[in-house]
Amino acid sequence: MKQGFLDKARRGIITAEALFSASDYDAGANRAYYACFHASICLLLHHGIENPKIPHDWVQAQFSSEIIHRRKIFPQVFASYLPKIQFTRQLADYKADSISKNTAA
Image (cartoon, rainbow, N blue to C red):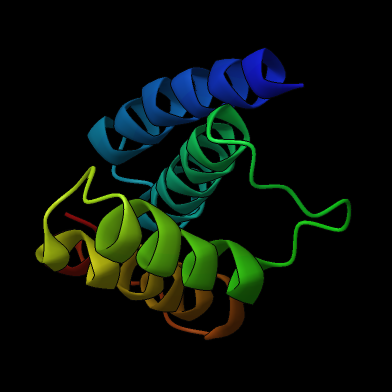
């Protein structure tokens, strides 16, 4: 299961970069978020932390509390990355106007 999420993360970032290069910033932001989300799930699974439903808020909370604060695998600044990119994805997916290149970057 862990390898499957890692594979999805790798494919997602490649797709996000291609979409960004093609000026499709909305779809690129979507794929970038899911690449980060899937990578986070993989890391949690690697450390024996799992939830069968894998809700987004749970992944973000566990990543912050377990991976950053408790185990100190990444610096504190990483705690804001997944929520920020999720917010960008939500703008890209649910607003009528497309996001800008700057926002997508």
